[in-house]
Picture 1 (cartoon, rainbow, N blue to C red):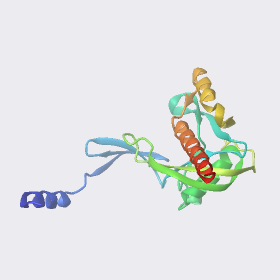
Picture 2 (picture 1 turned 60 degrees about the vertical axis):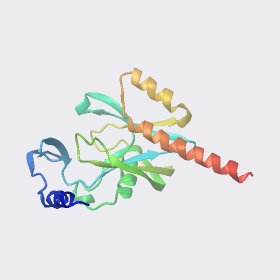
Picture 3 (picture 1 turned 180 degrees about the vertical axis):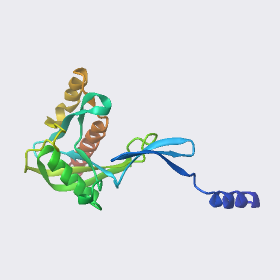
Picture 4 (picture 1 turned 30 degrees about the horizontal axis):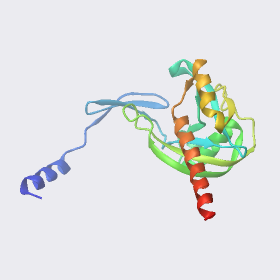
Length: 202
């Protein structure tokens, strides 16, 4: 490293991070300006869990509800926020996944497996979402979410999911693209198992 490069590196370390300014703050969200960027932050939350729940007979569990920001009914994966109230402060994301699955769909999961984690919408929000696969499902409640959410639960055969989602889109529903990521993980895992079985035959 040249002296010029060393100096540039030292100067970059000494630079103060851009100041964050709270433009507005509500019960659940805050609007932040940092440098030239404005973005949303969830208040008191420490992450979001999204659940890829698959029944023993290979059906993907989805939820339907009306979303006020979009003014439309949506088809989504079950999901929820970790630590956004004092009652669940410090809750682990895997536990959030179990809790939200039960609240929204009425299903309890025997197994919860981490799939991946990443930004939900990196240009709009600081939120990081984590996808979990839930299996060993058993009915433990009625689901439907909290009062006022009006959640409808759908169990869609994985083999028919693409056609089912396309039909919902044609009917005017907004389909969350993360569902297609869920199908990738389901089918990718299934293909890997098939390859392992084939290899074991030789």
